Image (cartoon, rainbow, N blue to C red; front, top):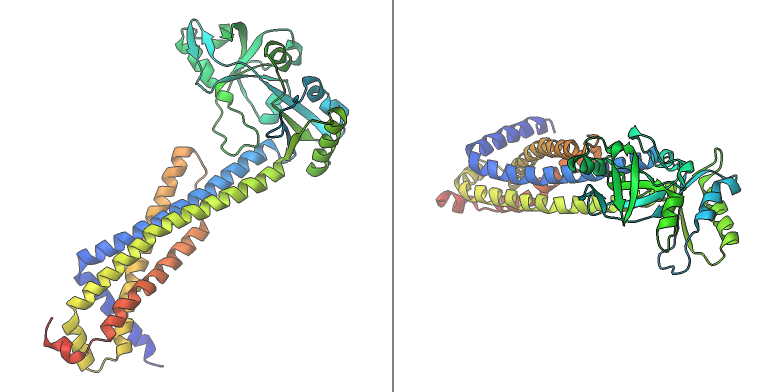
Length: 401
């Protein structure tokens, strides 16, 4: 027992010398492991960061948000605008409600199309901006007094299209939508992509008008979504139940999907958790490939060092000593690759966050798993070469390479 420490240190020094003598082979094995570890760390970290960003977007709107939509597959009459506008006044459990009415598409200014192909007009109420956190860059937002007027608020990309068409100030522009003209009275600030938002708001490509105006000019109009906020002190499930009961009394045949922000957060985290596991599994494939590379490196090392093994066995080294020596070399190689992979994976994660404007952090779980797995890979893929080296007959090994 007293010789275990010195023996281990001797094995570590010998392993370092052996690996340094075969620099190219060692480098190739190290790169394979580093790529595998970097993939695992970058992918797991990216998955966790995406989950955190989506949760942040939900919480920015508020966890007291309730969304109301017609159920998928429902073919009957949709939500009426009168019911949607009356919701917050009729239910004490709801403090604010903002319906959206889908309108036309294809915006034209000065004879030129403006806005992306996905651009669409939406009818909204004044409370919509506060509920979905829209900010104005210029002008004003849609007012509840605009019901009989064709005033419009445009998103940042639509405003940029208006400027390209020759009108430097979008507030001086008129837009043609499906043959009707709308005067621009407000421009929205550019809105970052909201991948996990509970409310589908493509604000940059939108033209927002009064909900009553959209209802009036759109054939077979219906309310697409109602975004509501629970009253202070009201549990989100109680608010959702109250909304369902109220609509059931108003339109018994109407089928609705009523979802709270907390429910959406749970669904989102579950889905992104599965995605993170999938990304980790994909990254692990490259780690296994790197482990196979380590095994090949160690098998070649055993073949090239047959005479050395024979000499050590002739001088009294046991099979266990030989096995331990090659296992230590394998673990050192994979741990070194793991540290390089940790740095590379962190750099890749930083690059992803810098590109997407996400908050950068490296998942502690991915670091622990990555380094732990690299050690396990070293042991697993080093066992066969180490066992093969320990089984060499010293007489045969000394007879030649």
